[in-house]
Image 1 (cartoon, rainbow, N blue to C red):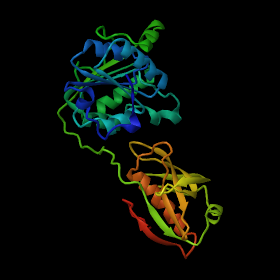
Image 2: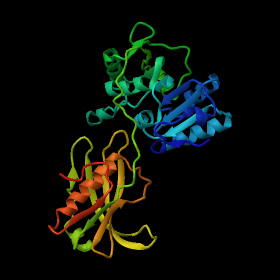
Image 3: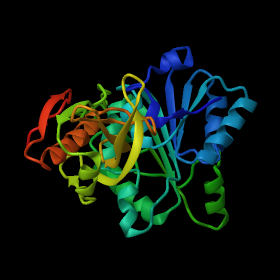
Image 4: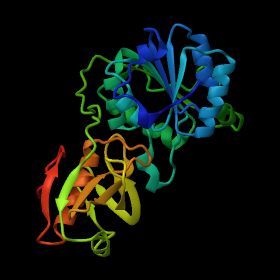
Length: 337
């Protein structure tokens, strides 16, 4: 059994083809030591079960347990749950979702990292079937109150049991964290909810992978002259913030497999649902031209955010000398401005 990398999923995935059969799709987010996940797959052989986890040691442990139990109905995703949902899950595909003892992120500065909030529930609702089941459990008092408030405010889910939560659930297998909490007398809350029939606006469009950016600029400037004028504060704000970080000298292969001198600009792109740290290259040609492109280091995906970052770098380069002239580009975003 081998886990999928959340950053490499198809947008969206064809899970029927991946499992080799059509079956109800169950998902556990943050499976930890995989005790609950393995039991879920064992007890539901007629379901296709997916576990998402950001911890690599937990992924490896789940792989071993899944292989040992011969679970052909189990797949794993290593990475961020929001990305797995947003990019990898088809609309109205999930029949059950389990979130057991999510990280409460106690520090005020980290509250934005809490998984469960109104926006997350809207994303989840867009990927769940009508009447799909949502199961959440937590032992953290602060997170209990937070989850209660968020669920009671959502338009897309309703309680299956009447009250917002229960304080006991004798039907579920006890997880490691659950047993630890109960052993020290810390009560748990169990939220048994379901997707209602309220239509949800799908504001979470699937990312699109487009052509690799390619920009050609005529310039009398050498790479040294360009590098000397580089400013590490170079950034772009807006819906997709871009920060160009360090610039390095490097060598790249051109389209003819010949080595060319180049500059590599480490760039961070804050793009939903997949932020990327990429290398943009400024490659020198012998005819007073430079090419701005995307380095393959880190296996980046050429999204609209990557094109935006390349456009921002090109605008900066064009501003360095009045003799600079844009001769070609294939960008999916505006290069002017």
